[in-house]
Image (tube, rainbow over all chains, first blue to last red; front, side):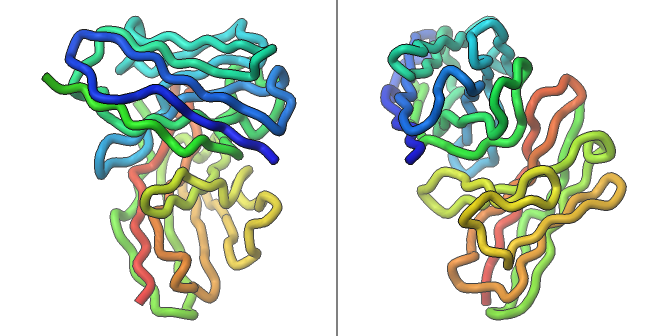
Length: 124
Length: 107
């Protein structure tokens, strides 16, 4: 059974940092790219970031480029989002999601499993 | 940059059929997928590769495409189908792109 269990998140002040984790099980972790996708309160879905199955390729939305980084620990089957210089507009529910297809170096756009989301609130 | 346009809200009578559409230039190049999101829950993949269903998704849900428009059809809507529905595809940078979502009300 595929599971993506998220942790991290919370209320932080603008300009500070936060790290989100996505602990997974039930699939061949090292064979799949992973994404972070966020949803602002009452809003739609926005893709944020991607890391390939082997960690060699990463991509970021323009809105977070240069402030957010992603990493993965394949032996521990965990995926991370490091968020720096947070802004109020980064306030959102953050989901980790798995590529549907394996070994897509540049990222799939079909996500067949999602975590339950973790809330990040950036406010003074 | 690219956009995927969805109607903000649609309603359907219980047991009837409803189609939700998604329009965008990128759909002439990339197929669409569809997600269902209920309040307080993560999205669930309903349709991928334009018209394929993951295992466990009822065949009441079907997808199609024509030109720059993709569609999701729910045949015989149930009260449990009341949710937000999002299409997605790629943008001009090859990144994932979501439509704005359509809230479905089952009357």
